[in-house]
Image 1 (cartoon, rainbow, N blue to C red):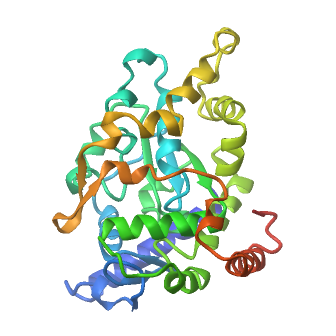
Image 2 (cartoon, rainbow, N blue to C red):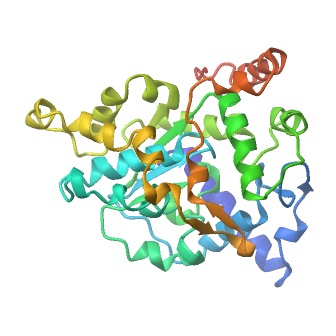
Length: 331
């Protein structure tokens, strides 16, 4: 894609060299760690804080044989930025010629199942993704600088969804507590860490900036979206998404209200009340389980005011504004 992604590839090549130099010693165990969020300590890998499992998987992708296809669609997000909703929207848009709305897979299967993540494939086996028919829709939380070198390509398209950071923080705190069954870690305790850039796939602002710059350098390949804009005008952005993905709605489709049908099918109210998304569990690493319903908490814009003080909100606003200064990206 752009020079930034090519630089990411060079960095990845360097990590492979380092890995070979230590002759089998677990590289992940050598990385800086920090505790504080629910769950095991995060590790610092190429300027991002990650769960150790993600680091190992991302390293493994270098030699896994994973090959992007020219018609792949990659949905990239920082965690808790409307990922599940956007997966549903892109899946529905891209597959609208294959399924009737009344018997659509989204009515019976969780969006996280229909759109697998590159770094957390089903049963930890990347071969599952390789067998998916084209055009594939895949998710990732990786910033471009962590992409495996095989993904430095001019072929696939990337949709990046970001979200107002205060809402991201609150949603992430709730989600991490749910994953790790943690009822003791306070919001105040992790707020200071998030404000320092310490969170899963953080710093949050660095993640956003990488994709923001990619979208400016290659607007035909990277579409940068904001959750709040999508929520306020979903039909407008569904039409825009379809155009970007190369499957624009025809005049007849628009006259027949197909974009509105996609929005209704994928609405938070619709998805969150489906049995497929309310019952059952996902099995995570370490034999931990996560309720499927955990991916549907509120989805509200501005919910942070119910959990954070105005002073905390102002503090985070100032930090983010300073970190993004001069980039043209604002929240």
